[in-house]
Image 1 (cartoon, rainbow, N blue to C red):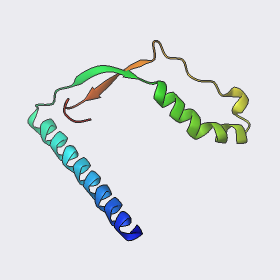
Image 2: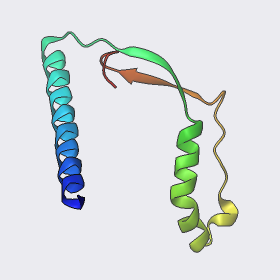
Image 3: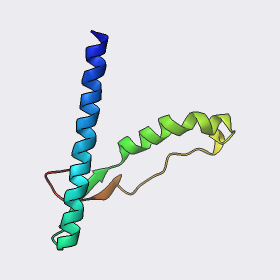
Length: 89
């Protein structure tokens, strides 16, 4: 059974990589044809702050940066996100 799980994970990863490649090719085709449209909308950054804190706080404390570590404050916590197509992320 573990081999089957490993094979399924490999197939899934390959499919994800292929989908990403196809999306990049479609984006390049839109840029070359001049038909790029931007979908701009609000994006919450609270999850990003938590991710950065989880990832780097231990390193900051190990290197004695912990006392200077503060969470950045953003006006309203929103940032505009740009996407080339509303059907893809």
